[in-house]
Length: 104
Image (cartoon, rainbow, N blue to C red; front, side, top):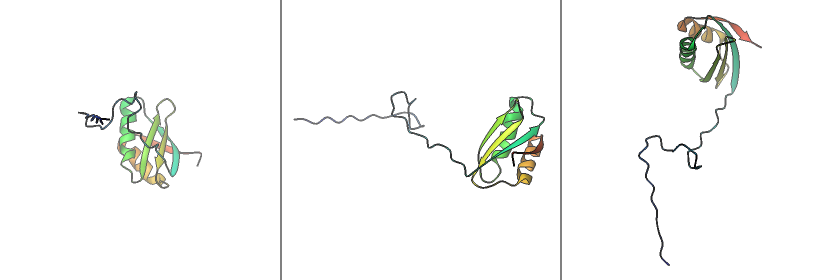
């Protein structure tokens, strides 16, 4: 009985395919120790969302940022509790106003 070896090489630098065949690398779900929701005033477009998201991701410990443009709510996941002053500084740096924490 002969043995056949098949080697599959990928030219992609990503290390996985589209995943439709079930061989894509699985991403671990993001887990956050803390989740906080803030109200931000002044955002009107996608650029606003991008600016706020970019500045908040610079805050130490922030793992994920989700902005709801329609409501002005910004959800921030982090490894540890965030100081409102740090969030306010990041939102201010982006050019917007932090109204406050929702449901604190």
